[in-house]
Image (cartoon, rainbow, N blue to C red; front, side):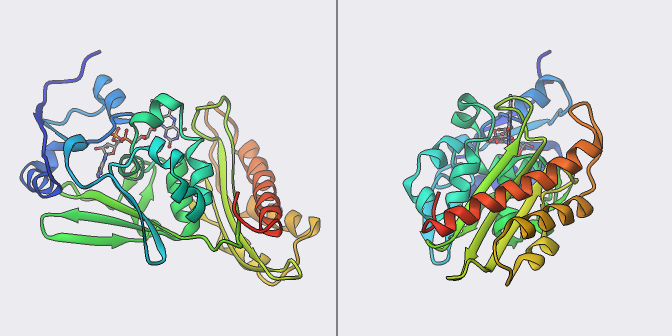
Length: 293
Ligand SMILES: Cc1cc2nc3c(=O)[nH]c(=O)nc-3n(C[C@H](O)[C@H](O)[C@H](O)COP(=O)(O)OP(=O)(O)OC[C@H]3O[C@@H](n4cnc5c(N)ncnc54)[C@H](O)[C@@H]3O)c2cc1C
């Protein structure tokens, strides 16, 4: 099938893009890398009258350090993150997670802004930004607004973005060099969306007690979910098989997966506990080894 007819607009700046959005918002769709939108257009599940191609808008593709954040512009492609030494050094969790996004061809086109705006609860970047408690910067004709992930992701493929708004940049808190992080995912085939995925960052004291823990899970709830109760359970405890087991059991109590053609709710629940244990172990070993990947 071919997409329904649309008018094609190609802003050369973010200002022009938000101007188009304020004019045509309800009838318009932004297109960035097109990796999620093009299939929807082709199947006519989305039939916008105006397609606003952000691809040539200047000043939206960047990766830079800014205070406590690694700031990534909306048009930055997944492959650029994958290759970035700065990302690897400042946010190893993101560096590891990005390799799980689809296949190389998809990472060559797909963008950070598109992935965050699409709001798929199984997608890797929403899970990472949720674990790190990062920030999502939204722009419209009136200026900018900053959202935390819990305010931004509302439910399956639904975010707080209004029709006249776009994602401008995403801010990932910089990981301490001594922290260990791990991104663990189980998918049916490499390149598929994860059945369950877990993002973990831990900081330990000299006796391997958890000083801080950041944990989030994707693929099991309608939004990527921070595992706050598991984090609280771990703080102050020494890393051990017993505490990992407790963390896994608590995760299985917290998650509310649904059955679909890829797996039953019960399978996903079991998997959630197992993957939390794996991610915690790996992050802890990396922290004990001096941090980083
Ligand atoms: C075979 C296949 C496998 C895939 N596997 C994965 C996977 O494992 N993990 C994963 O995360 N993704 C996967 N994807 C999806 C894809 O990689 C991402 O969703 C994609 O990278 C989104 O970025 P994009 O730039 O292509 O967005 P687009 O397709 O251009 O847009 C997606 C949505 O976001 C909106 N949008 C885009 N940019 C902005 C912006 N700056 N502000 C506001 N709204 C915006 C669009 O209007 C649209 O609704 C897969 C896709 C395919 C085809």
